[in-house]
Image 1 (tube, protein in one colour):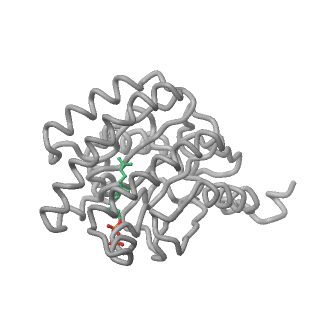
Image 2: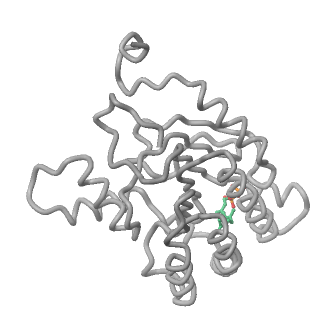
Length: 248
Ligand code: FPP
């Protein structure tokens, strides 16, 4: 995480050094349609891109990478698409676990678990245990994730009053099965041309730099990530301060 001495909003610092990049991987379906393919083929292509971007993120020194794979609202999609996605997630986790382990990547899943197929839940537990020692980069995949629901569940878990932002961040992580505190997003990238947050990491994005990319997710490359990070490094982050205070 890029450290800020200035922001009261900065919450618990993750142990992974390097920026926290969050990605809304949008555009698989439109990319597939444009290429005469099924939506499922679009998600398969999206998975290939996700692999490439995970590898590139490790090389680029990203500390935490959070990928939005399935929102709680995505349950409303046609059942065959949802079923295919759940199968794809399980296959992806099984396929990636060893590579994560070899590359020092800790892989965790963020979101509700109670509505996932039990086979996927079981795989998540296996993969999280296998990669728990990874210290180079934290890869979080958000599945059945809703930021607003997470805030509501964290608020419901509050005891007494006077909670700090740090304590709330910890609660927020805990309700979504992340043992590490919810860390602030430094850079949020959304592919697919839309410019919205779609219920993703609303608390954690309080001071995120936003980057909206026209390319569909399957077209996004390691070079695009490199450019996004270069753009991010050139930004002037002020966290509410006046420009002169930040320059000093
Ligand atoms: C959004 O595109 C994408 C999804 C809902 C699924 C994302 C899943 C992957 C990329 C697979 C990666 C999996 C792992 C485990 C990292 P869309 O279908 O909304 O596209 P559209 O807006 O063009 O219809």
